[in-house]
Length: 233
Image (cartoon, rainbow, N blue to C red; front, side, top):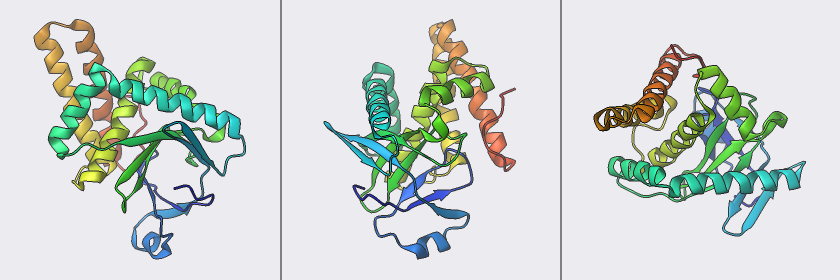
């Protein structure tokens, strides 16, 4: 993934779908996969203390954005809530997958984040979208307004969504596509909602009840062949 020019195979079925990186640059793969096209994208990602940059026209800005997203994602998944979620994922996938984090120009204005996944090494890079001059925070705020929920809840949903993609691809299970990921995320948020209700935690109940409805609305949009960004009922 250190090459200056990288071919990405990006599926169009939704705006934050999995982006597969092929180290072999095998064009026949894009011909075999229905609805897939090859797109060049600039990106930056953090690897321990090093920030790698490719095809960037604003390197300093993208390095800062990559470091910020890396710190935010790692901080969330190191928290008690994040660790609980990773344990929940491990129980369903049977493995633990380490991800790297960064930013990329995903080529779609509405995209918030995505998984760049290498099927050969089974490694994943979760990236926030810096395309079209919009930051990750800009996109979270737009998404929060659309769904009528707070930004913190949207960030939780986005991070968990991409982490499910990563685990699903690494384990090879059936939840790899957008509908599968949203189905799994709905299950998780429903469990969190019901747990909060049993514990009498009204604030957490309201939070996860709303997130459950948002994910359910996203599922219905996908089933109707639409992008999943529509306001929840």
